[in-house]
Length: 524
Image 1 (cartoon, rainbow, N blue to C red):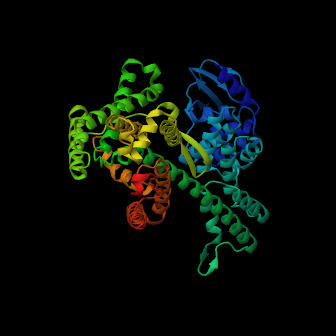
Image 2: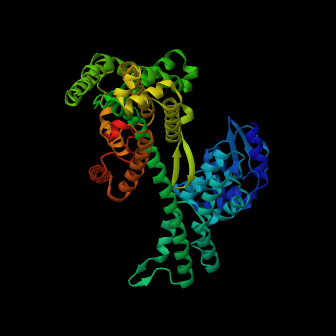
Image 3: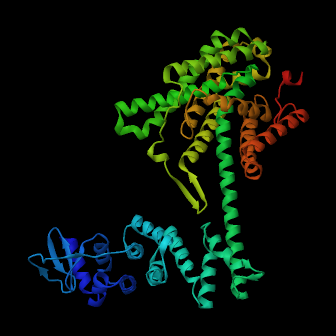
């Protein structure tokens, strides 16, 4: 009843003839009355139009009533009407009136204190605002502090003003569009520069010149946004490649083992994340958004344990026999794929993002940086930092570097090379599990997940330099960014082929990769 009272008090502030036109007038009179109510901007305008849209406005003869919960009130006088008059007629609204009514309500909602309401209203106005809504939009633009909403309203105002017969108004609208970051702005400016039958559609040369300047400014801004988006996408892809290849760089660089099951170790980490997610959903649904934090160590340990078993049971008996190792690990990869299919099914499983990874940062109108990708970039940087500290600041790291550079000398000095091999292989496998955990947040998790990354991982390792952590980082980032720029130019397939050809040529010229391995064995 409070909302009804507010509606009535507001309706009394509106001219009685406008209220009667809204309910009793012809369709054209209704449209003009809606525009006049919006232009007036009285406090009760929104409530009145909302009641009309909701079907609460009825007529009894020449009286205009609001009927709600079997209570009728005269919208002109504000007096209660008892008993309910009979007969009463519904106010008939055709499609045009309904469309103008919805647009008018959106214009009046621009004064709301709620940002979401104002944003929805601004988007609604972009679809149907006309000259009658212009005063309300101008008032809203002057008061709006939110950059996104203000940009939408500025675009709506300029769209309307472009149709003005006044040259100064049109030029002002074009200049306002020059500041827009919305890609749709181009569709408003381009028609001003079109030709029809050899003549310009826009006859005024000053308007055309201003439109050309504004179009150039918008295109430059959009090009900058596209460049930022490609660089970010390239860094994101590079982070994924880095996580996928980092473990392989350790195992391949240390032992020279061509582990064709590395992709399946990534898959094990992804499925470990899926299992942890389901456990949280079943036993701790209130803490579900924290499942990913718990999944990180689980994914690492699951893949590391699988890698250690693989090294202890198969690979250590095949050192120095690369062909047999390649075939054996390829067979193990098939076994792991079939095991996962047996346990979880052949179909992809769903791994949900936590709530804090949903959405993104709206840097520009055409640039959105997803939180999931930002999290993966940060995660990859953290993993690389930890691995660097492990290899350069710990006893295990010293042993790993010693065995990598000169296995025979390290063994002669008492380094347990067999145990170091096991630890290093487990570490590399665990990092593959971390890659699987990260990949589960941006793509499908299925038995064939690892197959998509094994070739790319080897390309990163070979390009960066075998056994070189810095080389792996540079190669992953370089390939990721190059791939995104080439995709924009030639498409995904040709970009992949171009990168493969580049790596082949590069390795022919520099077999040691970007960073050569240092040590006596490397120089021998």
